[in-house]
Length: 540
Image (cartoon, rainbow, N blue to C red; front, side):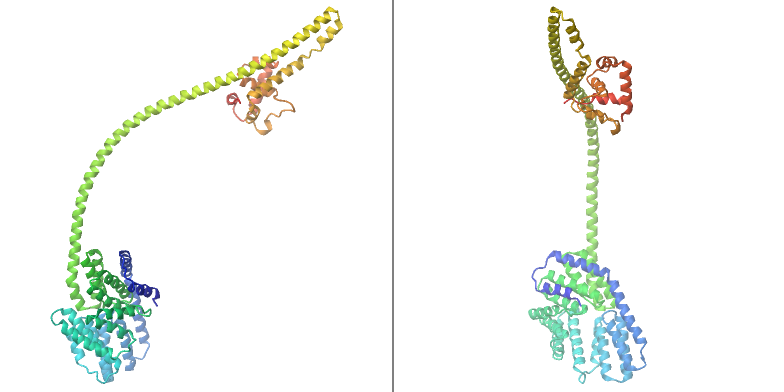
């Protein structure tokens, strides 16, 4: 039913290590279970209502059936609510008298005695149990009777806690021996009460062995687990091992809540141990749960026990709250002082920041000016370098062209001189006619193109980038530049005057201007930007 839970418990009891972390996890689990306790109580009440509904359908005018119904309802209320359990125990007795059945009367009185003892009514319990004779009853009834008397003397000794406690314990042991002789040796009752007797007889080793054996049983109900773990915790308390006892009592308290057991001492004992350890916060939570359960059940002796420890825990809780309050006030004063210091520091820092910011602005402005000057210098240096490069390239080009031109003139002169000497007029006219000025002009432009493209190898590519694909310049085979490109090549060389461009290319000024306007209108940029972008084309 609860294999995982019991496995954990089983391993715990055979381990010697109890960590603080595990205890904190258990406290958290117990607190969550306390929060959900109303859910378990509602389940319990629904189960009782279901029993009542079932019984209403039966013929309870038949007394044996009524006795059985009252018995089941008594068992349902036995550890849940004292008043309801006592009511059904009395009804049980009334039906037993109507049946005139001595065994049933005795059985009912034993049930009444259990409720009286659970309520802390010791005199009434003894009066009830003393009024019956069990000599002719079955072993089961006798065992239950002796167990109840044994528990009576144990509880009486614990409650009084005086010089008579030893005598009460001795009597309780006697009744326990009588009960154990009648119980099956492998039953839960036999092993549990044998362990309880060994605790009362100060035989802790045997008691621990018996109770640990029970906790290794995966078939225990929540209630059986709770009473076993709670009883075993007594051994650890007596052995001055509170951590192990706390661990057990937390497990017992969780099981009590899940079984809706209100007649319990686990939460009370747990709160006591935590109070002694100084854990007032948790002690307060669990003592309040014990108070709630005792009030719900109606257990008189529990209320008496709680009245002794509850004021101590709550008083210590109030003292700690007051101490924390004083500490908080002290901290508040310190924090307020520190806050004022921080405000003053912030004011000083802000003033310094303002000064630093003003200085930074001055430095930034100077830096920007410096960057601008550097950029202008860089651009000027680049233009100067580019201009020098162009001059060097074209100076070399024109010296080379002039050299070739003078060589041709020299050759032409010698040829004319010879023909003039020999008066070969026809050949002179032929030589003159062989001079092809158009071809010479074309050769001059090709040389210009080669030199320009050597300086600006990406000129055509970057020029075309200013146009849509369909408007880009498409050069013919063996053509380096065409007229469109040469116009703007000259502009890139720094010749912006249309008249000079017209003279170089042997066009009219109007023709050059028409070319320029036509080309600019096709571009993807404005006319004003076009020449500026041409001038940004870099040399190699």
